Image 1 (cartoon, rainbow, N blue to C red):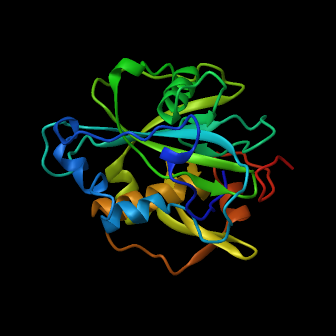
Image 2 (tube, helix red, strand yellow):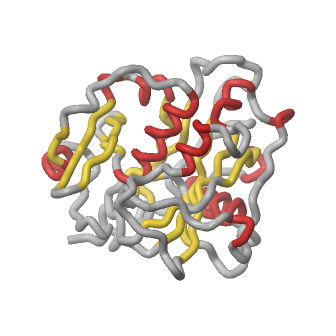
Length: 258
């Protein structure tokens, strides 16, 4: 997905989408900064985890992604084993081919809410067992006008990690539990741009995480207070950067394959 989208409607007001009111007793202390009160500036920033280029959509397609965080449940500060699960989309797909993303996808008619969508998609893509996941918060939907989707990020804690794998390589060909410490490392942080758009990105091994996913990760690190100074002023050409990566992306800014 590309970066973009002004904050959408309140999920409580969207038919079929139910907010999660997280319980502090199930939240690991180190995740508390990104699960604060509604007025918390860090959480507000995370809800706006997209550029201000896009406009709110009138009748968007609903989708959800799972921002799955793992690590020592008892740690007060971010633990050494803190991680987030990312996937690599197959380069043969028609949309978002070759992009790094969170597990997730379009809401099915039988899905109860955004949490159900995110967990169902994650199970289908990675083999994630839903009973190993504690949903913590459903953020306000992020409208992405270029694709017509309102994306609901579902923040969740992985309380019982297990092995994951790409279930259908034609859709998702790699599943990567990524250490938060690697995302924080300034050596892995870059800004990429194309035409009149630019946004934060991350190097994850030979892959590059950018667009919607890069924006959510960037603001999550800021909201949690985990970010350290990095070179945010140099904008690297997006196409050149991706050509040198393992993403194998050929795309238009609307997310369709070229």
